[in-house]
Length: 213
Image (cartoon, rainbow, N blue to C red):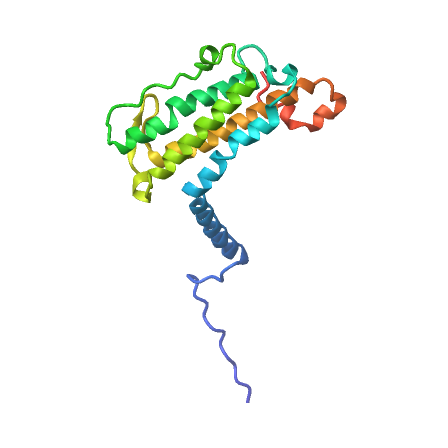
């Protein structure tokens, strides 16, 4: 006698886990981990901030004027102008605003003059400006470390005159990125001195096309 076994009923509500779904969940987990890595760590921030003056001094000191006075065209800044701008930030922006937040001052920050360097740095030598920037940055890093900031402090809020509510952590992260932004600007401006001299190789050099007018 042959026994006939009925096929096992299939639950239409249950479906096998596909490999792609596993990958997707792993990808989501990686994104979460990456987002956590983006959080401000004071030691990491200081590691960049303390290197910027030496990096720029090494790049710019004693260079011919052709490099330090180069611009990307009318209304743009030379490396010389950028150093003056960074000095003004050390004096009036990062630490004064950090103190403002830590004091619990609810008034907006004093507006930052982005072009003050055109009067403040007038007739000063580049090596003098580089030295001033290095000295001010060292003082500001020492002040920052003396604040002994906690994670709770990094969440303290202040009021930007244009952007509205901001946190101390955001201010300090912006300080770091502001440095890197201007280091990139200096490199890009200097590279464009040879934009024509590179000939056909310019097609491979993305720095020559960045922020084209």
